[in-house]
Image (cartoon, rainbow, N blue to C red; front, side):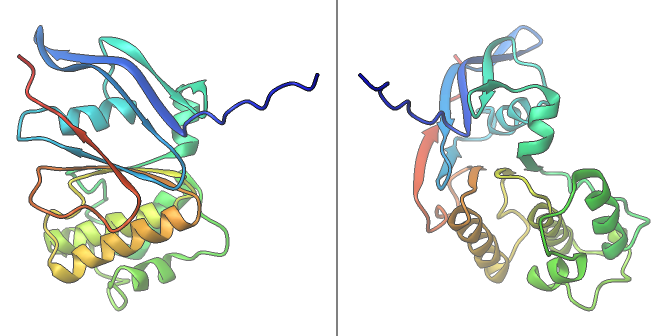
Length: 214
């Protein structure tokens, strides 16, 4: 008899994930998964651990227990670097470099999706004409747009977005939605956090509600 087909593992899967700070539980144990072509929306009030969860998934913090797998494989630093694109509260930019220099520098570290250019990324996020502007001279909203341009340039199938709508006007919110929609249409996936003040992106979305640890 032929072997039965095996199901494809999720792009990202966490099981039994738990994190504490100063011996105080922040979240967990927590199970979650994100498949290609979908968005997982993580909601919860301030202090529920949304940012901490994304930092654990990105490998910036070490969990107390549990494991993270990428496409069925344990998430080593090398696996994370090749798959995960992270945009947090801090823009992760070099203030004394121009917008174009920032994208060129980060592209050298993270790689670049095929047939894409830093100039095209700046135009996509509404920063055409700001190529020579120093990052430290940008507004908070413009720095967020530049971080999104960096994310779009990187060949990462899974985006981890911490409060991606923060510091953006209505046009910027629609930009985030367009980027997420396009990313999912191309076979990517997104895990994003929100405290509930904004609607979910108009894509296939599941909800994970985080509560403050007791």
